[in-house]
Length: 156
Image (cartoon, rainbow, N blue to C red; front, side, top):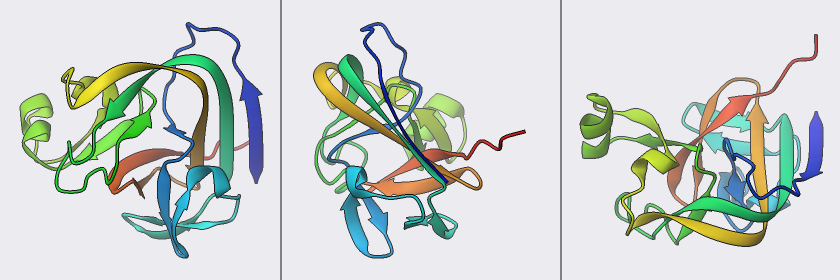
C-alpha cells in the first residue's frame, strides 16, 4: 500500500491522468473529497466496491488542466464544474463515443473531449493532483462522471 507526494516545479510538465483536490469520489461511506481518501478505503467502481491500493498526490505550481462544466456530459455529469488532468480517461457512453471512436462506449482522454466552451483547457496556479490505483484498471465515479484509474504497480 502506497501513499506518495511529489512537487513538480516545472510549468511544462505533462499531466497523464488524475483528479484535482475538491473532486468528490463515490465510496461505500458516500461521496468524499479525493484529498480525504486513504489507502484501503473502498471505492464504488463499475465492477463493485474496490480497495484503493495506492494514492499519489502531486503539487503543481502551475498547470494546464481540462475544466468540465457542470452537466456538460449529461444531466448532472459532472455535478459541479470539475478539473482533471488532460490525459485523464473519461468513460463515455453517448454520441461522443460514436463520433470520436465509432463505438457505443469508449474511454476518451479529457483533452480529446475539449470543445473550447463547456469542456475547455484552463491554466491553474497552486493545484494538487491526485491519482488512485487499484489491483486492476477500474472506472470510478468522480463528481458523477465515470473516470478511469490505473492498476497499482507491482514491484519486481
